[in-house]
Image (tube, rainbow, N blue to C red; front, side, top):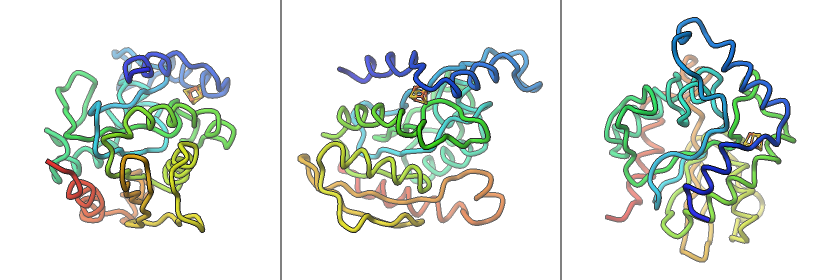
Length: 230
Ligand code: SF4
């Protein structure tokens, strides 16, 4: 399979009844500010480089963010933080991500969600996370040869990444590496050493409270950028 084939398969997945209902209800109900816009209302594929050196693993699409625009992290506050930081550290051509036609290009970087459909209250269930995990496994297999760093946003992204590494048969340290902002784990893959980096999720819960600051986000994404080969 290729990435476009995988994207096409993901975009029609209906494996989680609760999330299918929610993503479609939100797309019909809309938020007043976006009433004139069509909503995507479907699962969100990965976005960015086809042969990335950096893979950013997020949590799940926001109801009025990616579930509206159809592109991961695009059109919500978390994305505002993420893309601004990616731009500051040289991994994006522009600091903003407004909609899927805004000419954003990521530099050697790809972004995926752990759960591909918007969940109510941004909280997927354990079953939903388990059901969606094979999509990450497949995407990881396709991009693994070029990959040098995985940045996991939040503990759910961290656990999802470790699960995908184990599923691929890669060497994950024991005991299980603990998530934290700036935490690191070195993973042995058939393609070489891969660094897993932990990063607090740029959700409003973290950015409004000062738990995550711009310098903290730049520090982790900058470390990923510094590992890129020319
Ligand atoms: Fe399919 Fe994942 Fe969406 Fe569930 S969350 S319906 S597994 S794409």
